[in-house]
Image (tube, rainbow, N blue to C red):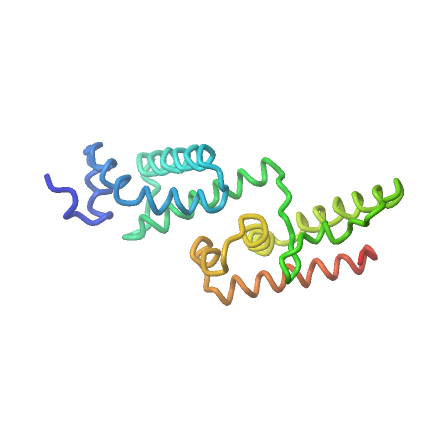
Length: 191
């Protein structure tokens, strides 16, 4: 059977009817794109491979349970699963993103002084902690774009593709995230 001639939806039907081998074709077809999108976010080969495997385990479990209903949209569905697993990973690891200013300088480094007293160091560390706490308080869609842009260093086009929104929506979410951070900073009197 020449599986290359079948579309994704037909392959899924074959898989659900008991043709286990068609999964290899789906994997061969989409592995590169899915793996690359994960790798761009986590920037670690082994972690990307683990998340890729977790994504396909989730795909197989969902297909077997009969809960798959993404008519003709297999790749975007798998990309969403992989993307959500990456977000879950970052949440679990509680990795704080690097926030940069317009000129590319890490905002936290702007707070450093040449000769820092113990009091200044405590104040700087508290400011970092406050900023990270404020980032966690952002709505998920804003936090997600902020982390993807400043931590994973993705372009707004890549963010839009991964989150399934337009570039303008991704830009808008970033604008709202920065605006909300500024408001929280004013409330906390952090400059």
